[in-house]
Length: 485
Image (tube, rainbow, N blue to C red; front, side, top):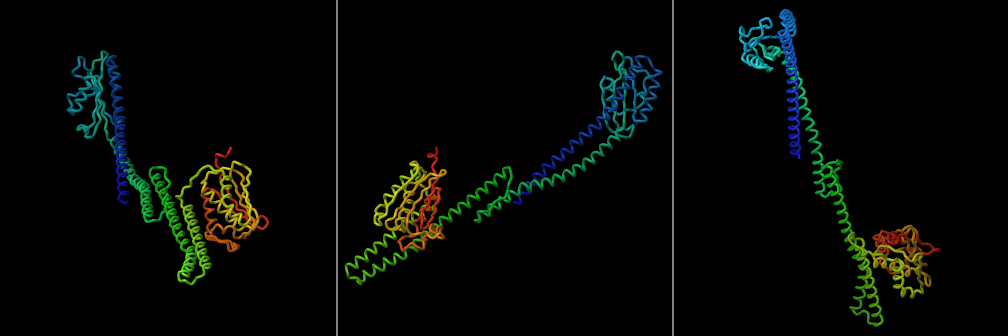
C-alpha cells in the first residue's frame, strides 16, 4: 500500500510543481513585459511629443524659439538620463534644416539596429529595439519616431534612447522575489501533495485492513469512514458487507445451534422411553412373562411409549422448522373464529372423556389475520389440548376472540390446575413443565411450538393463572389490512 501512497504523492507533487513553475514563469514574463512596455511607452510618448513639436516649429518657421525648446529638452534628458536625437531625413525632398536637428548621422557611426529603426522612421513607421549599445557601453532602448511636414512627408526622425539598467534591476529584483515565491510554492506543493496523498490513501489502507479482518472471520469490524465521495461509497459498501456477514454468521450459528439442540433434545428425551420399551421387550423376549393378561399389558405400555416418542419427534421437527429463518409460512387471509371452531371440533372426543364443555365466543364475525391456516390451527389445538389435560372434571373451556387496536386478541380459558405466577414465563421454555402438572403426560414442547407459531406471525402469547379466574392464555395477532375500514 505504500507504493500507492508514493505513487500518488509523486503524481500530486509533479502536477503541483509544474503548475507552480508555470505560474511563476508566466508572472515573470508578464512583469518583464509590463516593465519594458511601460518604459517603451514613456520613451515613445516623449519621441512623439518631440516629433510633433518639431513639425510645428518647421511649419511656423520658429527656429529661434525651437532652439530654446531644444535646450530645455536637453536639460530634461540629462535629468532623466535620456538622449533625444532629432535627425534629418536625407531622402526627403525637403529635409530638416540644421536649425531643427541635434545630430548629423553622417558624423556618427551608428549600430546597424539603430540604422534600421531610422530607416523605418524615414519610411513613416515607428520602430524600437533594445540591446547592448557600443556607444553607451550599456543596454539601451532606442525608439525612432518619424517627423512629418504639413504635407505629410517624413522630413526627419526623433530617436529617444534610454538606459535599461533601472528596468533590468527592477526585473531582476522581481525575479528574485518570484524565485522565492516559487520555491515556497514548491515546498507548499510538496506538503499539500503529501497531505492529499495521505488523505486519499488512508481510507484505502483502512478498507484493506478491514477486508483482511473480515477475511480472518471477524465480521463485526467496520471501516469507520464517513466521506461523501467514491471512497466513502466503497467504505459504506464494505460496512454493508460486514453487516451482511454478521447476519450470515448469526444465521449460521442459529442453524447450527438448532441442529445441536434438536439432536441433543431427541437423544435426551428418547433415552427414557427407549429404555422403557427395551425393558418391556427384553422381559417378554426372555419369557419371564407367561400370563397373557400381563403380556397384553406390557404390549399396551410399549405401544404408549412408542406413541409418546412419535409425538415428541413430531413436536421437535415442527419446532425445528418454525425456528428456521428460511421456513416460509403459507400465508392467506384467515378468519380466526373459523380456525378456532375447527380446532374446538377436533378435540370434542377428548373433552367428552372428562365431561368438559367448550365454546368459541366472539364480538366481531370478521376477525381476519394474514397467516398460515395449518399452523394457527395447530396453535389452538395445543392450547385446547393443554386446557383439556389440566381442567377439572365437568368444567368449561372458553375461547373468546375480540378486535382491539388493530389486533386480534384471543383468550383460551379453562378451570383447573393453577400455574404459579413465578412460572408464567418459564412454561414457554423447552421441556419445562409446571410444578403442579400432576403427573400428566407430555413432552414439554407444546407451548414452545405454540410460542414459535405466534412469533412467526408477528404476534405475542402470554398466560395468567389464579384460582378465581382459572388459567387464561392470551394470543395477539396483527389484524390484516384487508379488515381495516
